Length: 407
Figure (cartoon, rainbow, N blue to C red):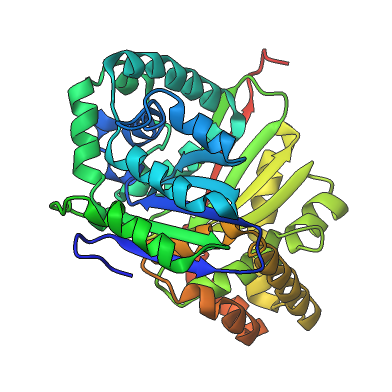
């Protein structure tokens, strides 16, 4: 439902459920940040839990716990989300609490300064993690002009120095009704929930919406980058840019990536792990991004194998293009993806998260089309996908290897 102030809500009722989930999506993330604001979306997310007008301090957390529920939040490149999972009898009260947190945060200076330290510790832990380091470098490599290259975690320098006034101005600019989506899933009284939304979120003042960030990315030549750090084995992310979130190729991308590296029956696992013993672990995934998704292959290995692994990853993709795939591979992947999809619709939170995400990204029909389209693809469609997006020039390999004097 669309309200006069620009807010959107989605209600998904399941009378058989004993629980309910309420999620508020705000369309703001690292893609909305300037260099001088790196990590600000994530910082604001933390500060929203430091008290609001009607729930100062940690009152709202205690209230949710008294309901037997849980409250949390997350920041991504394209949105921030706040959610509460509760027993079905408490979803109305929980939604009112969420509304106050979103509309009336206090942003007290003392709390801001305390939270700076917490965020800086998170940043330090983030860059101590090999996977996180590679993830940042991988996105920088394949997204050169798009704001998708922006880091969600940001930088210590920004978090240390940004003023309370700048933080509040950023919040005011982006936390506007037209950028918000409220999703409630599970067992609840639909009319009562509608009333709560009308009396809270729907009364937020309508405001000007900031310009959308630049996300569309063209396909560039790939990069080969090797970094060194305090690790004992080699880590690498290999991959290439794929398609816009609205593209039909979005559907076949999951299938093609799963066949390539989605499990122990995949091409990459069978060859690089089982046959050649080049890796300790390897898998492939498709990441959906508005403006251009990507296929990403993650591997862990002995550093001496890095060149051979790069070559064989490329060889496996080229083998699919040249020789195709079997019906057995195709059907197995379809069944695995169908199972994953069904398991991802098990809980009220899972359902609310899925509906919210795809609606926020402007592709609500994806949920209804996914399984039907998945089962419509043939061997030729998978080959066509790799032919369209893969090339030796387009693939990037970002590796993290041990310092020579490290181990």
